[in-house]
Amino acid sequence: MSADEPLLSVRDLRISFDGAEAVRGLSFDVHAGEVLALAGESGAGKSLTARALLGLVPRDAVVRGTVRLRGGTELVGAKPRTLAALWGRRVALVPQDALSALSPVHPVGDQIAAAVRSLRGVSRREARARAAAALDRVGVPAARCGAYPHELSGGMRQRAVVALATAGDPDLVVADEPTTALDPDLRDQVLRLLAERQEETGAALVLVTHDLAAVRDHADRVLVLYAGRHAESGPAAPVLDHPRAPYTAGLLASLPPAAPVPGRGRRLPAIGGVPPAPGEPAVGCAFAPRCPLAEDRCRADVPGPRRVGAAAERREVSCHRSADLPGALGELFREAV
Amino acid sequence: MNALLEVRDLVVRYGAALAVDHVSFEVRAGETLALVGPSGCGKSSTAAAALLLRRPDGGEVRFEGRELTRLPERDLRALRPAMQPVFQDPYGSLSPRQRIRDAVAEPLRVQGRWDAATGPARVAELLARVGLDAAHGLRRPHELSGGQCQRAGIARALASEPRLLVLDEPVSALDPSVRAGVLNLLAELQETLGLGYLFICHDMALVRHFADRTAEMRDGRLVRVS
Image 1 (cartoon, rainbow over the protein chains, first blue to last red):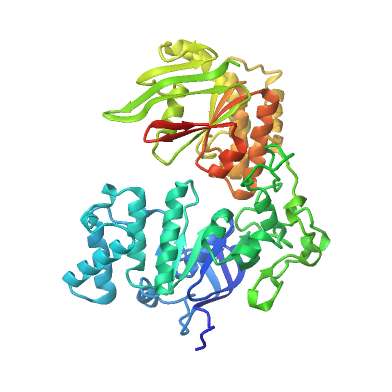
Image 2 (image 1 turned 90 degrees about the horizontal axis):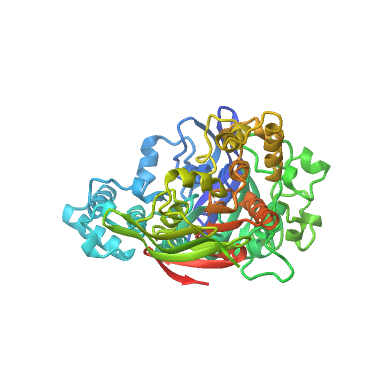
């Protein structure tokens, strides 16, 4: 096994419901020690993809392709027993909603101790001590170990869930970020905490988000999804500073500027139209109906990921027109109402 | 310039808890005042009390100079069309069983302004105003995207010919790629209709971009107005 071998390899992942494909052939790697953001809007397939990394797709989903952990364990089609042995130890989930991830009828310290006991088989006393240490690491004081979830603030609860998910030192943590409005201070705190834990343990973190602004602050790499397909991927800063896919460019252009732009009022460049519904059959590029650069081949053939830039950057874009895109892609989008 | 909405020493209590603690601000016609602060700081309680959706426990609310907190419900009802809320959840703010065109027509009917001859054209005009067409009007909320649904909610608010809109996180539940379009629509409506906006939001980049002034709340108190 070489040092470069990815922690996790996803190849041609397809997830469908009743024949309607929600994830339409994704391939990517997650390397140890990196924070990878899966960015996309609702229906892009990001949460489903993230769940597939844990073998946690809904029962009625049909999954094809491969999701392979370093060492050869295949997660697609794995038996429940195989998956159960991986959860907490090799892969772990930090869910969106901390309150529903914790039992309301047990103190948080006990819940983490129970997880530690089942993961490590240590004594109760040892488990309690480790739980207290795990909570302490995420900034929950030892005095709060006996608190029930409802007695903790939202921030403390999120911290407790991070402690719970990382109690077994997993190689890969998947954090499903809230899609509804969460207090941004709290969100940043939790993401910083996750990144810190990840740096300490050398684990990989996959961050699911719809917020490109958060990607810049918290991720090393980003994979932008649109309608269940790869739109663009690569190191976070270059992708966000110089997007090569019109979708990424339009999204970034439509964010409120950090400082007022002289001569421009309150109107923002906007992407016209709406994203396709999940599973809506798409001929050609799924973004073509909303893309100012679309031409006939975009409407006929699905663009596959193509490498751009140096090989070491591992940067790819799925766009027929990526070779002849103008420099200032964001300017393509007009300030439509 | 006279204030459209003027709130003085507003107090809202839930039992013993003081959710809004002597908050004062004003919103002028054609202006956006952003109300910002962390979750639970009292933004939405302030908005609900300012709209008299909940009677405040203290202080005054003036709308176009008229004090509202002691007005009987009957008189308030006559004023309510002029001050309309737009909510965060685009699906939750429309009846799931009602077609969009009926949801937009409802304020006209309730307010006794429905005219069988001109009503449908008025509804079509309101839908066009927010970027929807007749086909959208025939659908129900779950058949629209979040952005289209929020546009329908805005059309319904406009049906009452309001002077003030209270926008409670109007784009935070929307997909990023459709947010800018809805914000542009709100900007356009404000410019052409001279609406005053009380804009509740906790995305500071968006507030800086969109609002004229900002009122910051913490623990029920106003800590800064700029």
